[in-house]
Length: 131
Image 1 (cartoon, rainbow, N blue to C red):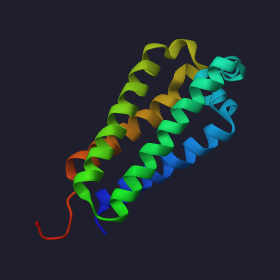
Image 2 (image 1 turned 90 degrees about the horizontal axis):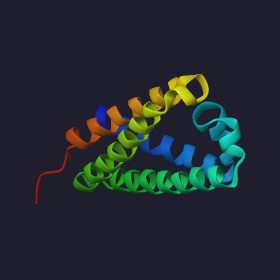
Image 3 (image 1 turned 180 degrees about the vertical axis):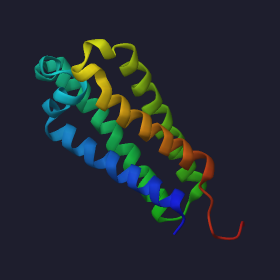
């Protein structure tokens, strides 16, 4: 199996897992991302859950497209992943000094996720012959 496809699939699965966890337990975003105090507020939980729903949707869409070898669609899903993660990483970087551990873990995860998504967006190709 092609390494780009594997990485894109793992990214999609990871996104679904993180999203499902944050939907069920938004306070778990506190220690590594937004801070414990923000994660305990109603507004903080609301924002974490809204991003979690986005992540589940992005992951599920990408995983479906990959499983059905619809690489045009998978590339679009990976582009959406890259856009979401790139923005998350940029805004996290902008406020990093006010985040737990200067946002290092969140920045590392966001940066790696953005890179994998960009790889998928630019390199996914179907093994099937074109129509």
